Image (cartoon, rainbow over all chains, first blue to last red; front, side):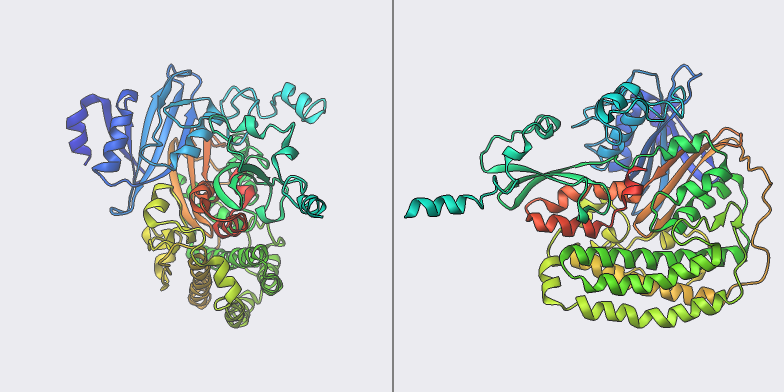
Length: 158
Length: 402
């Protein structure tokens, strides 16, 4: 499978294995195409998880990670791509409906936008909250003081 | 004569009972569901929760109704959000271990097993055989406790009060074993990275065996109350049906997926701990309705008993901790490891930068993903069925919100 994709996409795709787990490092522009092919041609029918990792010192600050599983093959694969702060990425809700909430959580925690998501809004934090807590520059004690004061009627949440 | 009568009946109309649209004046319900037309005068929006006895925690479900019929739902979650993933980045691997117990607090042992195994995999160490057996016994006991809690509360939601007392009475025996083992009943923190927190106490095997003989007839007893009970059948048969294809597309796992006829259990599909040593079956349903999910969980409890029975007789002697350094410092790299928690696939994705704290720790919670299927499952049903379906998915809000 990997060879086939490598010859198709050339340098845009790199396949590696770490501790027995396979992952594909993919160029951002190839993401929608590869995800769709993995679903339709390679039978990765179950999107286990979508998440992100923040590397503030890198030029492209975020890694977005899709963890996929195939029931017919009993196999997992991770797809990773790098995107810059403020850049958006294509939504995969049309490929796996389960992406809906998973993408909303990534948006909620990292501020990464997904193009074509049917209802992209915060999911765990309140709608009016400012800031994205899982970014590395967001302190562990940090809160949206203004939101806390207006909505909870207390001086500070700490 | 007829006019006062009409006025009399109008007192019982939904509006005056506080269920109509008027009672939502000033609320932001309609603002919060943009892009959806709520203009038909027969349709109304009802807010279920966040404080509602049948939501099993603080879950708010916005229901769009046509009379009693559900046209659509929207879940509002996050009331219990504590930022577990952020906390993980600011604690060492060892310090974070007790936090995972607080996600799915009904199955704390499973959470701990998944976390410890993920870190062990990242460090390339393995728990010794004795620890593996103790882990399997405690995890399967926890699965039974979790299913018992689910059965009691789910039956209570539907209107059967007796099972609650039965299941809680029997779950107590499991909690007593936990308490004797580690001092805690719910948030057990039973395992450590590399093995187990404690050696078993004197009489542990005897307690577990006594429990096995005690609980097997009790599970039959629950079934005599419900399996052929006509009210139970009416309330659960063909309620909240989800097809296998829908369940896979929505990422649903655990008993909900198996009740739709997909024979998939991580303990068999990608065995972890030492599950491959044990002989057990994966029960599945056929219709994917609430009744089948009930049957699947009942059968799962019996399979768990089978696993414990095999494990308790075979616990080897030996150390309970593997060779792990005092300071846990996994090499640079990342790992995804998942286990079959009582509610479905519980996964941990850990990115290590070589320090003592995880660079990023992501929890893949089964309840969160399964809850997303609620909308598909309740469309076209009645309001009372929503309660049954929330119960049958078996969510724990501590895990949904993390």
